[in-house]
Length: 309
Ligand code: GLU
Image (cartoon, rainbow, N blue to C red; front, side):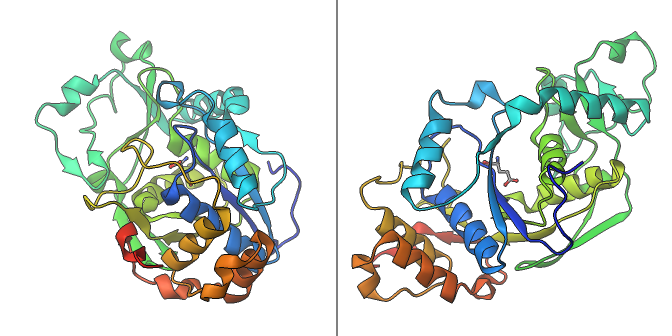
C-alpha cells in the first residue's frame, strides 16, 4: 500500500497542515521539528496537504503554506493533496462497515450535546447506534468505528508511555462525519501508511488522537509508525496558537529569524551571529545541534518565552 516500498529502517517523516490559513509560528514549529528529525536521520520529508474539510478551509491557503515553506528553505517533493484521495477513503470506510468494525450513526450533534459525558477528546459517544438495525441508521451519513476497552499504549519519543482505554475514555469515534466528509482520524491513518511514514512528529495537541489512529491501524492491519509529540506554542491566553484563533502569519521578510525563533522554541540555543547567517547556514546549524530530548515531558510552551531572543 505504500507509494514506493522504502527499504527497511528508512526514515520518512512528514508535515501535514490543514489549509485553514497561512503558516503561523505554531505550525512552523511542527514543520521545523519534523524536518530536523527527518534530516538528521538521513530520511525523506514529505508535505501532505490535509484539504478534506472545505468548510474550514481558506481560499489560497494551500499555496500560501507551500510558498512559505519554500521561503523558509524547506526542501520537499511535490506534496500529496488529500482531496485527491477521497475515493480511496470511501473504499476503506465501506470495508470497515462490511467487516462490522464500524457502523452507521444517526445521532445528531444536538442530541449528543444533551447531558454529554465528557472524555479526553470531547463527548464520549454513548453507543446509541452500535446495535441499531432498523431504517433509522441505514441512510445515516455518519460512520463510527467500534472501540473496545482494552488498554492501548504507545511510547512517545518525548512524552513517554501513553495509555488509554478508548471505549470508556474517548468512545466510538467518527470516520465519516454527518456532513459526509471523511474524518481526519481516518484520512491521516490511510495516508501515513500510503506514504510509508516511519515517524510522525507533530504537536502534543494530537496525543489523544494518536490512540484513535493506532486503533484504526489495527483495524486496517496497517503498521504503526513511531510518534514524537513536540510542545505546542501557546499564546498569551494559554491556548494553542492556531489559525482559528487568528495567529499571525509569519513575516515573509525574515525567514532566518523565524527559523531561529523556532529553534529556540524547540530548546536549541543558536548563537547571535546566526542572525546574520543565510538560510542554508541556519539550517545546517540546526541539523548539527538538534537535540529533541531537551523537550522531554514538555506539553506546551508560551511564545512569550521567546521574548528577548
Ligand atoms: N492536519 C493537522 C493539522 O493541521 C495535523 C495532522 C497531523 O500532523 O497528524 O492540525
